[in-house]
Image (cartoon, rainbow, N blue to C red; front, side):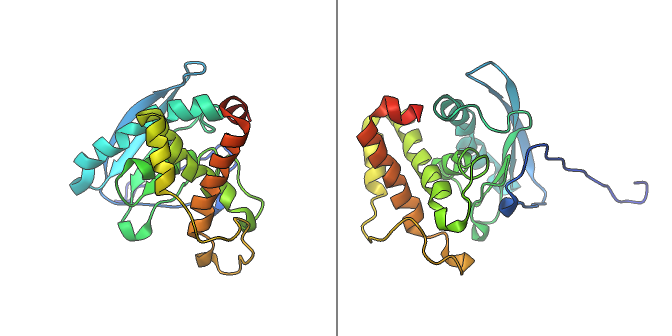
Length: 213
């Protein structure tokens, strides 16, 4: 601006999932990659942001993103925001991870986090629940995306092992009766039992019908 300041503009051309808007600013290390759609060859930028001290590890753990988008596009349909981008920005661990539309923030490093938040682009951002009583539709699908990626990358035995890891034995319904406390909405049952509902549905319908649905 000629006075020692700089103005940046951020534009979102898709309807936005408004409960997941965020601004993150720091001295990031940045790098890019390119997603090539397996459906029609359309390309899209992938953008990554990490703290300088974590950049080397992030470059390894975030590297799964491109392959995971290709896989999810084949089973869910095209990445919903393909005319813009997908990216990951590191945040402090205390902030956790969240599926900010087209730019996930992640407070840690592992493939589960990467695939979970990526899965939210379809279920949580493009498609979301009418109200928080049905929050499992966001978190159950995203958690199940972790298991599907385990199957894609490690085979059926890896999928079964992952589902065993996510077993939920505490009982209760995925329909949240009390949504008055926003800090009690995101609890284990909507993640893990939500994923098990999809696991069960797949078993009842069979793969062909389940994935077609």
